Each structure stands twice: as C-alpha cells, then as structure tokens.
Image (tube, rainbow, N blue to C red; front, top):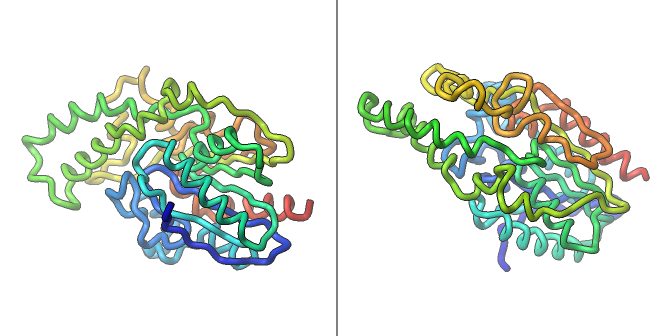
Length: 299
C-alpha cells in the first residue's frame, strides 16, 4: 500500500508520535497549515482560524507536529487516500503506517487524532493486540455528531436563496452554501451520526497499558458567510428543539459537542473555548498536550 507519509526521526529513547487527521483534511493540517483545506478540500483552513493566524497568515501557526519534532520526538503523519471516504479504509491505512513506524528505531508509539482521526485510532485499537503507549484525541466525536442531520434544513435554505443570489462563483455566499451542503450530505459525515452503523459496531474499551486523554471545544463560531456567523445562520432556520448541541455557545466547537468530545475511559479530559480547528493551534492546548506526552515519557 503506497501512502503519502511524512516522517522525521527523533531520539530513540522517546516515543514516536503518529498524527491522524480528520474528515476531509490531509497531512497539511499538521505539517503545513498554509496548504491545508477543510470540508472535503472545499475551503482553506484559515477560514476557521482567524484568531490563530497572525495577520491571517496560516504559515505563522505552530503545530503540535513541529513542536514535538523540535523536542526530539519522532513524528509521523500521512494523508488518507480518501479523506472524505468511510472510516474502514482509513483504519487499514493506519495499520500500514504503524507497521512502518514499528520498523523505525524509536521508543513506543503514541497516537494523536483530530476529529474523526480519534475514531480511526479507536477502531484500530479495538482490532489489535499490540496496544500503543497512549491515545490523545482532539475534538473527536466519541459519541457521534448530529451535524450531519442538518442537511435537511440547509437544503431548503439553499433552494430558497438560489434564485436571488448571483451564480455561485468562488468567494460568493451561494458557492459557500453549495459546498457546505455537499459536505453535509456526504456519506462519510453521516457515518458520524450517533445512530450510524459505525458507532453500533464500535465495540471497544480501555486497553491495559494505554494512557488516554481527550480535549474538546466550547466555541461554535466557525466562520462567516456575508457577515453572518456560522452557526448563527443555521440557528435562524433550524427549530430550537432540534438545534444541535455542537452549535450551541458553550456546548460545542461547531462540529462536535463538548460532551461527545470526552473519551469515556480517558484519564484526563479538558475543555477550551475554541472551535473545531482552533484546538489544533492554540498554545494552551499545545502546552497541555506536550506536558501529557512528556509525563508519559518520564514514566
């Protein structure tokens, strides 16, 4: 299996850190944010990170990948072949990457997964008898996300707006709505619904010798469309009783609820006032994750 992998060899006494990106993203989320795309490659990452990129320059943001590499850890990541595809093939790719990493000269392996990346790691661990040293998840929907169900409400909005908005060119409200709707309708996103077959089949639990930590966000402000903040635009069209926790202020990061972000058997869980992507670049989160890893490394 030929994969798009990037790896930096660190000190052999330290664990290798393997990074797993989320749905619709690629390895650039960890190694080169200026080239990273979100929502299935539809938008540049910076639209979610206005507070994290000085002067709106995504290249100025430091990633955990860089921080840990500079601290002497072996760091590895890859771009999933089908970033907006189902979880199963991504788990197979993770198995191959771990096989490659085990062949390198380093200490044990530690996994860091963002968003769906944490679920990919859980599915891998559920099917192996070779546990890793630790799993740290960032904004992972451990209990699923109801955001995929919003397509039924966004579709009428898009249909209503279509006749009154100019043809959808890049940078326009109509184009943005069309692309967001495509993502919300995707099969891979529906797989993250709490009632999906994936969650019904995810029969895992804590593994002996594995340290677990999780991080979630409580700021649902993702981006703006023609001056209207998302999720505020959705709050205007979705019945209050059906408005998802993921998009309520103080309750979620825009895509994952604070409650769902907690790994059920984690040793540590933290919440920050950040959205789904800001968690990757906020210094407080980075410092906390580095501290967890170094404590694990000291034994």
